[in-house]
Length: 153
Image (cartoon, rainbow, N blue to C red; front, side, top):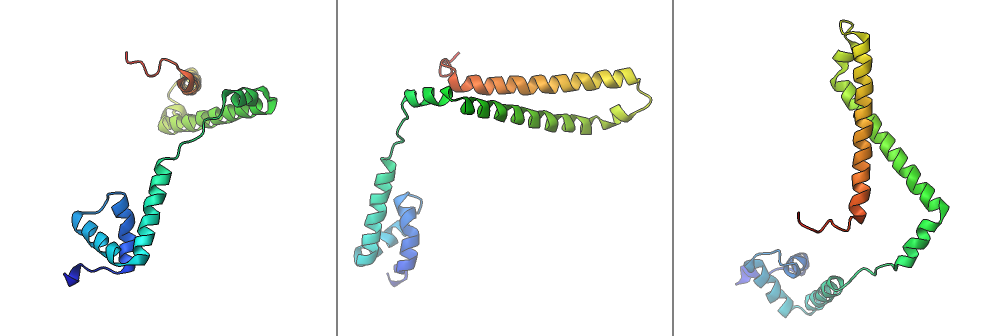
């Protein structure tokens, strides 16, 4: 049984695994045996148990709706959100546009293809990318307030 003895250092490392039920039965037995024989580790184990209990019972306090209504009444908050969406959309458009250009670079730089076709394909691509980003943004916005989201269809 002497080989099952563990040091305080090792017991402290294994304690959190024991509390979270992440260690095997052999290590559980070793830690519990050590905790029963060591007052310092028993005290620390008890404080870990109390901490786990306290954190598992914590709940986030929901902010009353009046605060959210007041938040949107301020012009700065509305402008900030709008500018943020514009910058995010513009960044997505530029990244997707560059990606499309990198993929189809040979087509656009090929002098054998008619200029009208290359320009039309470019305009079509830019429009498709802008439309994609717009629809994606709209779906993200609606998703947060969709009252029918939890209904199975």
